[in-house]
Length: 397
Ligand code: SF4
Image 1 (tube, rainbow, N blue to C red):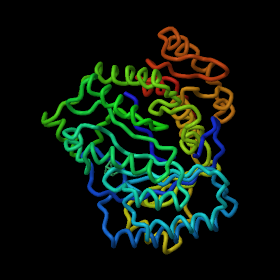
Image 2: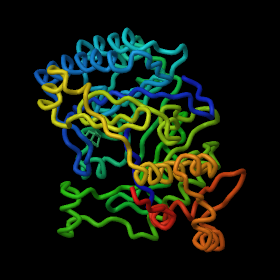
Image 3: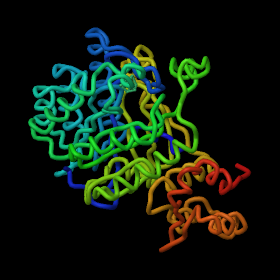
Image 4: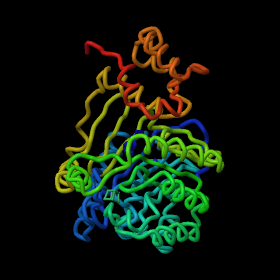
């Protein structure tokens, strides 16, 4: 099944990316959800104070190493950024704005969860310049939310959405998960219809993946819960996509749907292989062919930020990793992978090198080639990992 993409972002979006992107990771949540493999910890005031000082130190270091960075998008993700109190969030955003010249009309997204988004918090975010909100609703069934360990009810999710609108957000994205324990196709489509009636500009629909070493994976191993079968999950993906398209949402990426003009510019830049600078614990950066990742544990991150160690790391992406990533990210988008860009970036001839595989995939209507792009059909999206493996080139270095 299509897997959740890495977190990396009205703004009334245009169709092509303008990069580079700036990402800030906020590692706090009210509680740890049972399926979660993201870098996050339970919020405390002391940890938020340590985090705030460390992020400001990191911004100063990155400003010195990237003095000309002009971000086209800012994405504050997590974790749960809406948990960060205004006294911690405001100085960070002001330091970012002072350090990196923000482009006028820049897309500025903040992720929020229903347990920590009220009218005042949403209003504070707008006053800081946020113009896009990504709200993690995930499910509108209280029973399922409880099973997942989400610290909110369906009613709280609806109220948080209303607060975002009342505060003035005119571009709201909603995250939903399908393939949940006990969920059947009819229940998934009912949830989706209820969310569509709320009229968000953007929807991200992820298939649940059981991450190793999470409580939910252990519950599935022990037989305490059962996920829908593969056929049922495939129907959820296919029928959910059709319902969204019939309701005026355009699918532009495996998990992403939007009303016309509301693509996430931040994520498009990432999927198109543009540069992005990541700040905060566990944040990943890719700048000019180099890749690095910040320490994930808050104490280690804070130490590296305060001692200046953060500004010095970076490693070039290997040819193999660059090719793999270009394939994986390019094929996520419904417009597909630019064959010309892929060949130029990797030095490999995608069509000639994979002629037999490509012919077979086309015969099975899993891929299409149009306007110089190789793209997955909806059926192909269901087996995207297998297709990517079959197309992966190998290099000596
Ligand atoms: S809110 Fe998101 S990041 Fe936080 S614990 Fe739950 S799934 Fe993980």
